[in-house]
Amino acid sequence: MIRLLISKVALALALTLAGNALAADPSPQKRRVVLQVNEDDEDTWDQALKLAENMLENAGGKDKIDIQIVAFSPGILMVVNDSSVAGRVSKAAASGIQVRACAYTLGVRHLSPDKLAPGVKTVPFGALEIVDKQQEGWAYIKP
Image (tube, rainbow, N blue to C red; front, side, top):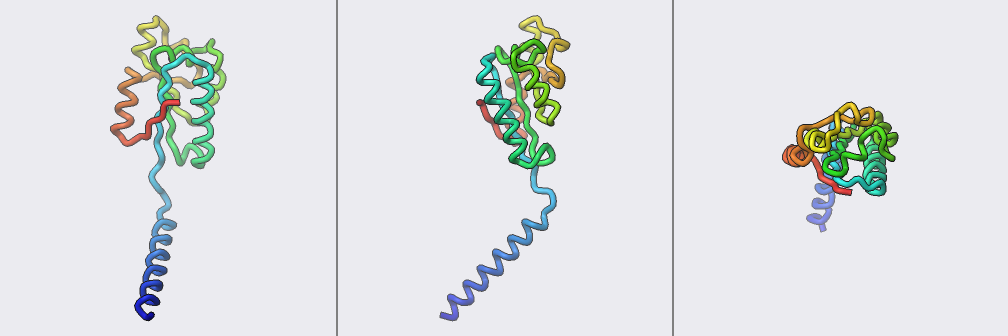
């Protein structure tokens, strides 16, 4: 009986100390997520943008999470100024979601970076950007 009581008290003390240690940490590690979009399908882009927006909101804002959407192959066509989702892409970029276009794909498709929607930046090679992010510990999602 006494052993059980001592065990319960020890467990309560351990849980209290662990809770205090977690509460005392003012800077938990920032979440990092990279999304791959290599399709020029509007529904896929709507899904990716909505997912990124929801993650940003539910994580507590851009101070709590880094989100990068990487567009390459046919997906590059949706981050140009005249795409059907260009406005939402620019809005996402303005809210803190990093939108990156593959410079290699731009070159292959004879598109110049000045054709990109406002807020979209380039990376040298989209697929390798995703590999690099994963090696750095970023979570990977393909909507």
